[in-house]
Length: 116
Image: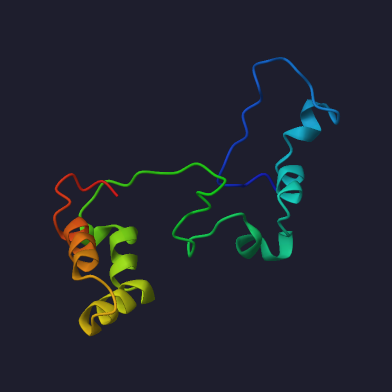
């Protein structure tokens, strides 16, 4: 596998070596294999992908995005999600509180900090 990955592994400054030695432990192919990624289907086997709104935040780093509602994936994905459509439908039928819809719509439309 060529070393053309969109990430870089930085060696630990602690001076400790791994059981396989520093060169083997920092090899991108080794790292991807340990993550369960397959070369033939790399994009689909990464721990998180572009179609995953959480971007793997359950076990990975979380990111903050600053920008207008119309330019950021999270608020647009919420507005077009089945969850949001179901929430609207349930509120209209009286199965759930209108305040849930109001709070979510307020978050989406009145987020003056534009931090998502």
